[in-house]
Image (tube, rainbow, N blue to C red):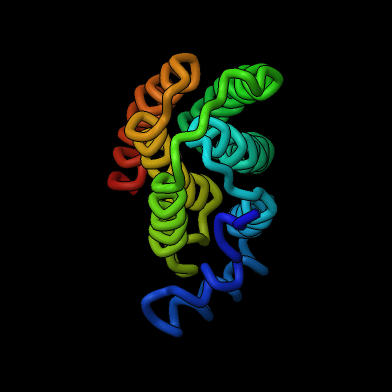
Length: 198
């Protein structure tokens, strides 16, 4: 079985050594980056298959859980009402979608082999997500930290969903991917508006 990627190799693949060192240090200091690192390790434990539909769901469950963990932290420690409300919406929405994905996984007969082209696309998406993580100096404020880290996280979910739409075959999984794109594009715009105004 082929692993999607090694988190150590993923961190090492950053474009500059300074970026790599910044992420290692920031992960220790910023709770949201620590949650991102934990999410990446969970995703790294998943073995790729020849089913784009199965791989999408198996990757998206820990990815969604990472968003839920960060949302819970924002709800607990954030100060901005808009971001706290967004965090509550993200938590509710993604908990529901995780339930949907687990139900889909319980019917393995719905997954057919589609090759392995989706694997490379997913690896590239993961690398881009980590490269787009904000610098430590941007993470002194809890609400801004939540928004700035959630932006590349959400974009990665959209990119994963687009890979599913391109290579997947299961209609129910593709419909879920469409919903993820729709929901998270709206949330990205809200977070961009917030970060641009602060």
